[in-house]
Image 1 (cartoon, one colour):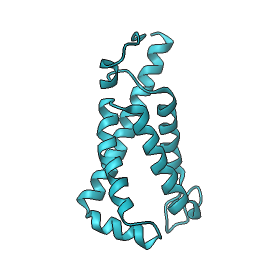
Image 2 (image 1 turned 90 degrees about the horizontal axis):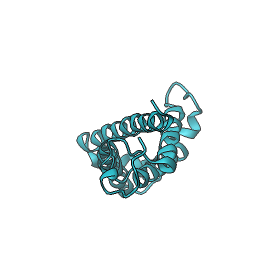
Image 3 (image 1 turned 90 degrees about the vertical axis):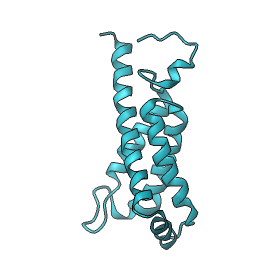
Image 4 (image 1 turned 120 degrees about the vertical axis):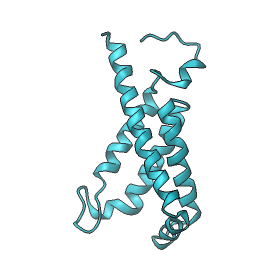
Length: 138
């Protein structure tokens, strides 16, 4: 297996897992009652309407990552969501949490994956590759 193919397979795994993770979190926000999430956002000092934006980025962005459409852009948006979560909610609990609140280690891992995908993309089994004129070197 060539090094380029291995890299593409690795990026594919990261893309699908990140997409699935965000999709499930977005689905949870909508199915659990987005108005409640909006109220929780307001209770921590964030505008309530941000809950709708975050949940949409997670849900729709998750699907788009899974199919590989707009990977770099969606990864950037997911990265901003993770930065927001870390600094607005998780940082005060510490890296591993404080027993009452989860830490930011998981969010940091998701942020790292999002940064990787934003910088490198993922073309293997991606809808994006259907629209690319670049040679598929994998």
